[in-house]
Image (cartoon, rainbow, N blue to C red):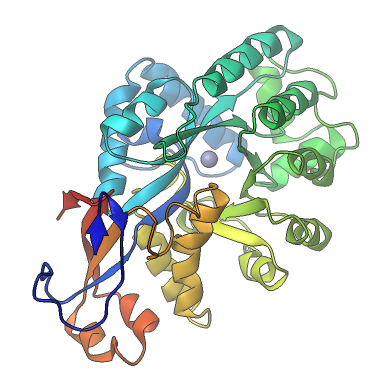
Length: 386
Ligand SMILES: [Zn+2]
């Protein structure tokens, strides 16, 4: 029962006043905790995928070719997400467009303003933009676009700018997202100051000696990020056991695993199951269409189902919903079907097989590969119906 855009009640049995949606399951809207909507108009991922610094170089070139035309891409991405049952996003934004389009497109989530720069000359400008972004946060508790910051990655942000950026987030009570421990090349740069990232930065003319955190460890970045009210560690592909245990002791920190992007880059096995075992908060993301063929979070879940059949279906559903909502600080508003929360819902059409087992094994049946998302509701209104 939905009233004023929120879930008023959950009843069992038949209700003659109810809308009959047919043979479907209604689930909480999906949470895509990491994407970059500015690339949503890419028909296919950017190549080469490896080595990673070459992919970054290709993305920089693609971005340069299309400067100033992101609104169409962002609107397209928001439509694609809503159509696929995603009602909550962790978006990394390089300009003001995303934050303004969220409300217009009936989307919700956190817009993390990207902070980038190695040289001292750019730091003040970046901090000014970051402060401006956060200062436009309205105080309504149920606002659609929450504002956050994203110091991009250890290889693209100086230690000084990174720490000031997190301090700003602390002061203004904003969440932070950072790409961290994503590639072996990143670890090599931090450890030795050399390798493909050093070559890339030198060729771009932005190299500075020892611009990263002094001791060159991922842990030193985690120590700073732990001060933020919320921190999303994006990817974390190469986190060590002690770093994972550190995250397990910090429930305000979440690792965002992007399964198909992880496959695209051909990384070593991701430690997400070990993280769950050690009490780390894990959520799912698609990353962008620069490394993924689409923005379908349901496709990420299906991919995990096919490749990790021993992980309980309930766990995968949690990663795709309530854990994403928690990561984005929105668990009071969405992520489960609970009275009082926003009526942000996805409708799953059940295939014949799934229909036969939905009452005995609901989570398993829900993730049957023959099912598809057919409609999405936001604040009690249908937004995407396929
Ligand atoms: Zn990313």
